[in-house]
Length: 84
Image (cartoon, rainbow, N blue to C red; front, side, top):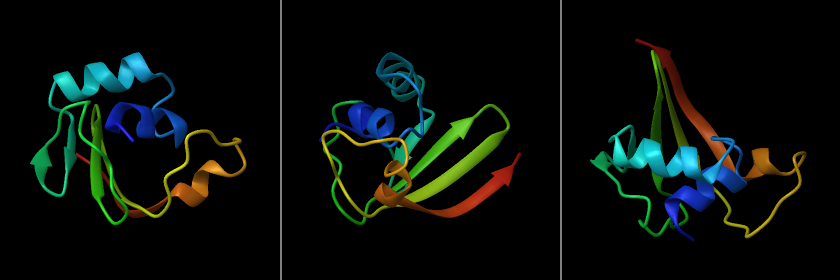
């Protein structure tokens, strides 16, 4: 699954276009490297998302094409969350 779609389906970012823009502005990294929106997400990947002053790092546990709001938390586990 593409990175921008994973961010949207997992509800880390609300819209796919916003996820795509975040990748273009180098606010998303996977396993310590800047990632493009077309990166293929795999189980076990560590994704770091920078939201302004916040930085969230998650580990991918599951990949689903669609999910309900109540099930999206099971797609990842939060490793760290920090304020810059």
